Length: 186
Image 1 (tube, rainbow, N blue to C red):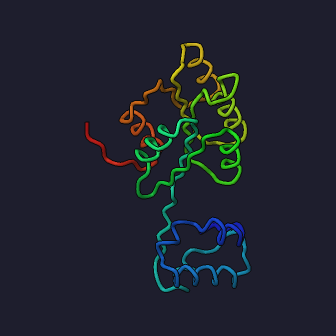
Image 2: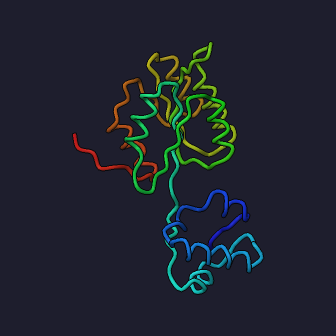
Image 3: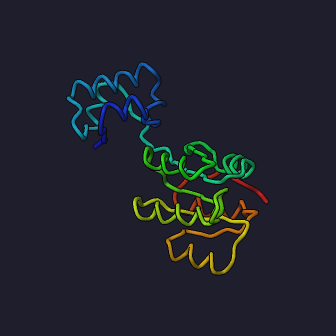
């Protein structure tokens, strides 16, 4: 079965796997779903038959990176962006919370110390995510300690990195979560 929740998701979020169909075939899929009454699950075979071909249904993986340093956002985004992976960056906790409320993420990578006062915003974001979502969270910091690492682990962090982040190790962890990564040589 191929799931379609609402017309808003089809038009607003545009399931990226459908974009490989081309505009005319994508429109045929959308029209067919509308004709079928927007029921929750649509039989994939019925859709494929109606548009005359197979659908590429592999789901795009989403990674959210949260850090107040633009250089970190850019470098990690560049390292992790590859075919089948969408990377979204936020330089404020509020932006990250909004992104989490609007999109399902497969992984979040967050700095502990943002430009806030208490220096543990990333740990608070980790708790926020773990209480509301099933998303894995990797924590990174330039100002770590064994106590902060233990606290991150206690709150459910998948991994804890001291900056600078070891990109090869990060990519191995990302890959172990079923998210495609670029091939990297040492």
